[in-house]
Image 1 (cartoon, helix red, strand yellow):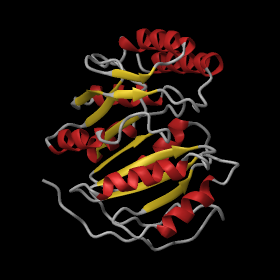
Image 2 (image 1 turned 45 degrees about the vertical axis):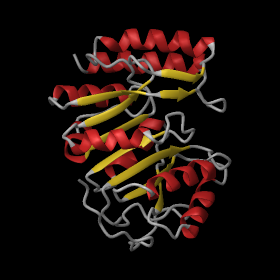
Image 3 (image 1 turned 135 degrees about the horizontal axis):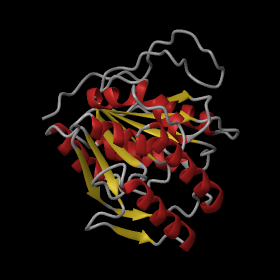
Image 4 (image 1 turned 60 degrees about the horizontal axis):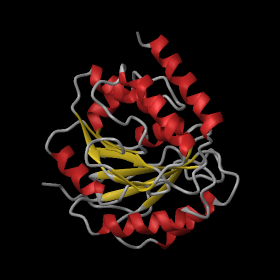
Length: 265
């Protein structure tokens, strides 16, 4: 089902525009799946996240790479990832690239467009979605789906740790706001989304959002292109260390989507 490609832990560097990051233009060897993890000040959490992800991917039939996108961290996130990368001698190389433009959408976009793997996608550093979801994801992608996204609100999904009231109320309102834009999708904001490269690229070149509306616009562009999106119900764990601020970030989320609605009639 999957072609296994040779992998290199030490891609060739072609200059280094920022001393804390490997070169933005470095070549990464071809793999079946590239996993993007956006990170902002994740020095404490990222070691566990990377080790869990490496262990899972190493046992799969497909070849993989993990790419951490540092979104302007002021802690030791980059140093920690590079140390783990140097110590990784298995079949799952770890890379780190930088994204100077702030915002998760910008970081995800940077990671997705910097690779060449047939399948790529992202999940959050808190591992709120079980890693085992990748198995079903790759099965759907290999059978022709353009995108596979995790859902906290599809039939069969569960919350392992309930969200607090502020996030539940804000999430409900946000889903009502986006439902008229992205048809048939129950959860546009779950931080686990994977794509077939050609379908992703065709949608991404049309996207302009880099903030909270990034997920919504990407799914909207995919649908407008006739791409097939699979939504998988998951057992989701609300991160106790989440940096999302319900009021401040919630207002920004609504403003981003309203702006998107005006820009994409």
